Length: 216
Image (cartoon, rainbow, N blue to C red; front, side, top):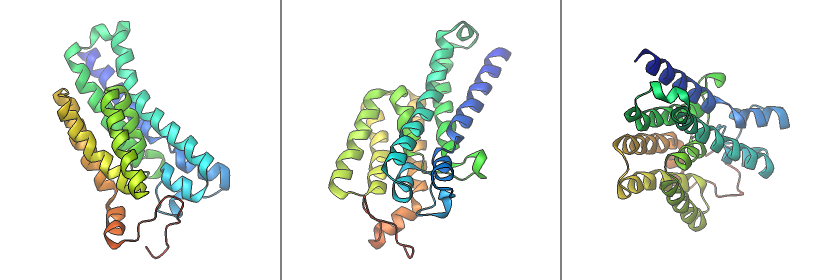
């Protein structure tokens, strides 16, 4: 039992530190010498990187943020596939996956390296889902893509994806820990979009390619 708890604790800490890796912040510092939190929406996510720095940087940040979430969950599966997995109860696996997934998501938006600030956790959440359940991940991505094609507003598309992941987890009858992750993560991502929701209601939320108004 002691070994199980130690392994679980290490996985949880590693997942949080992976999520905390401030990709967008580092892109701003190294590419333009700026603190991206002082520009645009103040987020360190790929959307603000796109508006502030450019397309190539945004693609790189998006890819790395996806990987952060995917690796955090994949580590749990790798542990169970290794000799160490013999010391961790098999019925802990979905709970450990859920715990590490949540820690990676929280780490992205509350990075220890950025005084607990960060992004909206959308890309990291998708990375988590790709390993947790690829079908749900692709369905969520499809919901995001359809809304983006219709509205050309990333925040609205992200909120749509957050709702879709909850629905899809239920439809595909996923384990209770995964349902809990979907509910908590979906609500958290929507909560992180509070200012976007306010701008959406005011009709001032920018579309792709538009700059965020300083008065918005």
